[in-house]
Length: 328
Figure (cartoon, rainbow, N blue to C red):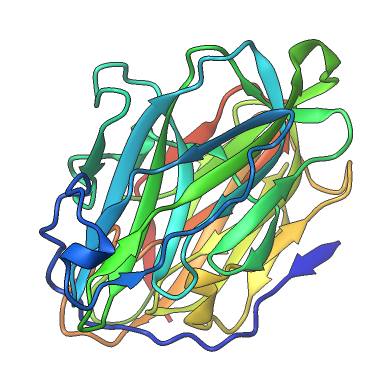
């Protein structure tokens, strides 16, 4: 059993109502915007065996929050991804994800669009393609898979790089995110792995103390490589259990949720055979909240998510189901 944890203190912006109005393809430079701050990330040289992708440069206006999605396509030969690292500004970045895109007509390759509206860009059609196994500096991390295990990348696989930022300052920010992916030829892979997400985008969280359960049935037998739980600032505790033949085993637990875990999640790693989910088994994510606002919260203002990587799998498993509500 291995846990990775961040202890830094983060500044939280609780009320961010406006969104950035500057287009990501504005072409503005530091000299053209008064007071601009350069927060572009440098991923270094591309891997010798693999590839590097960078988002276009974009401007985030003062006192704004936005999520951009940059669409592209893997065009090389079929390979296995064994290592993945992402680079996002740690001061103002909320998250940076590499998502799988199954809809070939959604957005053209090379386009970067505002994907802040969850009703326009449903996560169910863009599950994680690559996911981390450890953190380096929140919100940045890396994926390191066991020997012989890799995530499948087939030629033509579409992806979206999703960048979520909050700018509470009086200055515009110049931003650019990136990923590095190390690959091996497909014939060298012994076992294929992929990502899984147990989530609900279908809930109403009223003010006060409430809890919700996200219950997912697993379609096939897998070994979990790792697991993380995710909530936002109203979260108070989270646990994830595995149900098999009426017996429940605890897989993951955070008894006292802290705001910093939104930026730097706790990750639990499993040894081979330690966490086996059989076909038909149940995984239940239990999230407790104290909604201190006077509003009913919905996805994605709050979340209840369990996620990670498992094998053998050749495609992401995405479970998005209604929740069971209770009080505490």
